[in-house]
Length: 201
Image 1 (cartoon, rainbow, N blue to C red):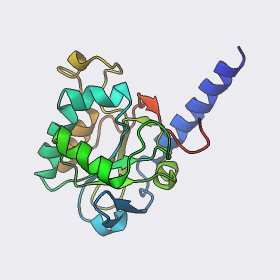
Image 2 (image 1 turned 90 degrees about the vertical axis):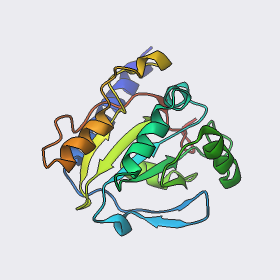
Image 3 (image 1 turned 45 degrees about the horizontal axis):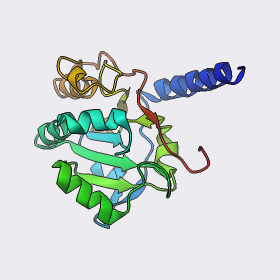
């Protein structure tokens, strides 16, 4: 019974650490996508970048893909020059782990259109950002600064019907930043399934 308060305290500390990173330079990383291409965050300096942690077995992630919400966001913002990187940090054998071929099949079936899907089975990129849930969303501005971290929206449920009418924090952050305004909600508590890091099961 004492374990729950400890876990909640640890989660609060992790959330606090993520909040403190907003406004700071985003951690650089190098990752390989499902097409075998290498991506380095610093190569996208001068562009807005969205990082989306995903797990196709997580009902919270499925909510946004089944509804078409995530695909619509990817299409909307990449059309405006935003680099959208989907990140898979599930370790081999865990829920959400995908080989490159399986991920490409999934992207095609779901009509998903991120700039790239980065395979992170070691969890290196996920740990660098302290990504906690799927989805967990980050927005990086053209100077390389982290300007948003947290939930995709303000409705932390698995109900597809809740997508409609929700406040989408990612779109809000991009819209405000591109208009030269400060991001009103620069940090929110992410919701979803825990990221399936190696050793975390």
